[in-house]
Length: 362
Image (cartoon, rainbow, N blue to C red; front, side, top):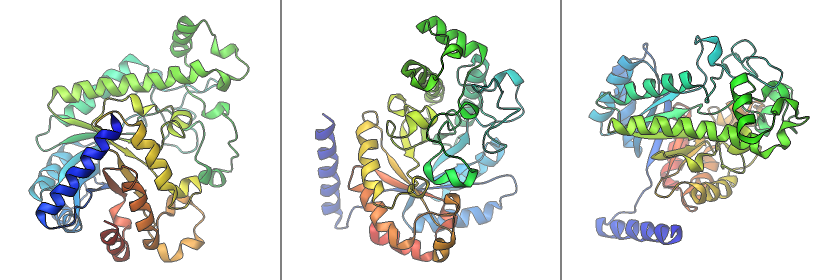
C-alpha cells in the first residue's frame, strides 16, 4: 500500500509540474531561534529573504507566547507556514520530583549528564504530562500558529552520536549508568508490576528489551497526549526526532517515533554527528520514510556548516555540517528516497554559496 501511495504522489507531482510548465520543487523549511530581544522588523526581512529562496515554512524556537504571537503573524504576512518550535523535556526550575533519575539514583536536576541544561523531565510522570500538554495547548491556541513543534521529546542520550564522543571525552560502546534514565521509584514500580522484573536488581539493564520498550512507550504516550490536545485546538503537531527510528532514535534516546500520531516529522539527519558523509542521507531517509506513520511527511533535516571554508580545522561536530559542495548529494539523497522536503538547521549558517547550491539541488 505504501509503495502505491509513493507512486501516486510522484505521478501527481509530475503532472502538476507539466501543467505549470515549471519544474516541481520540494518544500524547504528552516529552523532558527528567536526571543524577546529579536528585532521583529529584521525578522520580517529574514522571512522575505527565505521565502525568495524557496522556503515555505519556518520553525522558530521560542516558548514566549507574546513573541510567538507576533512572529507567527509576521510569518503569515509573508506567506509562510509557522511551526512553534519548543523544547519539551529539558526544562529547568520545575518541582524536584518531576525529573528523571539515572541508574545511579541521581536526579537529573542535580546531576545533569553532558551539559547543564540536560535537566530532563520524566515523561511517565502524570504532573509532567499535564504540564507539557497544557503548555503546548496554550501555544496552539495562538491564531497564527499552524503547528506546535516538539523538540527534546525524549530521554537524555544514553548513547551519544559517535561524532560527540571525543568532545565529551567518552567511549560509549555500551549504556553507562550516569546517562541511563529513568530509575525513579514510580517507573521501577510500574515496570515491575507490568513484567515482574525489578530492574534495579538486574546486572545489565541494557539487555532487558522490555525495559527499553517500556521507556519508549512512555515517550510515545506523552507525545500522543499532546497531539490529541493540540488537534482539539484545530492545529497540527510536528516533531524533531533522531534518525531512524530503529537504527538510532530507539536505542539512543528512546524515541519510537514510528508510533507517534504527529502530522509532520523532522528527523535530524546531521551526518557529521555520525561521522558519515552526505551520501549517508540517502540510506537514513529511506529507512525513515519506510518507518513513518502512513501519510506523515518526512522533512529531512540538514545541518549546515557555518564556516565552511575552514571545515577541515573544525573538530566539534556541532560547529561542522554540510559544505556547499555537499548540498546536492544530501538534498538529492533525501528527496530521491522519499523525503517530502528538507529542513535547514540553521538558515543563519547558510552562505550565498549554500543557497546557490540548494537552488541547483532542487
